[in-house]
Image (cartoon, rainbow, N blue to C red; front, side, top):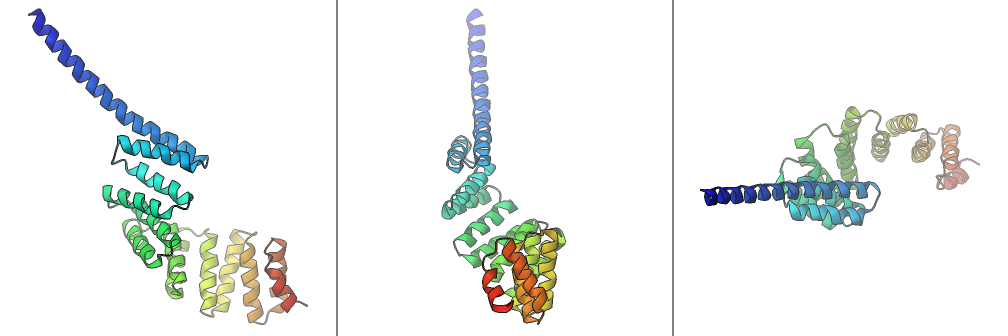
Length: 242
């Protein structure tokens, strides 16, 4: 009877030890991930990658570890490595919109603009309220000279986030390319209202004003751009404001 009880005790001990080891394993993956986040925040991207990788070794389907390791690789300009990690995250969760948008950014950095747009389309399909994805897709369309499509995306980004100065600025650029000079000025002005130190907006607003014959006002914008450190303004000042 005593021997039987000892056997049961040993079995119970082994099961308990296994459960504790399993729990410790999962916790360790989380700890590596958290440590990776801390290093990432401190811009120690290589150190972060090491910790994210250890988390993945322990838990091969750790979605966030793949996603953040992709972010760290992206920060190191290892765009192909980042794409591989985002792709793995998508395999784990095909509805993880952020992995599509992040992979799209990495593809755009590799000049795979059409591939980037495909990913941005999917990200928007899954989560249509992300202003940044519309902005990124608009930027990609602009690179393909699809200025009307770019304007539509920047407009959508602005509807979601009316304080997104860059969206106004790039929508102004697209309008300028379509020779909508007055519309471009309106957008550059809005960008400046949101960010009064937006030197490029002053400069391009000055260009559009010169095109419309508003020399004095255009020159004031060039001078403001120069004051804010936009050195290219000097050439336009010398050309138009003497």
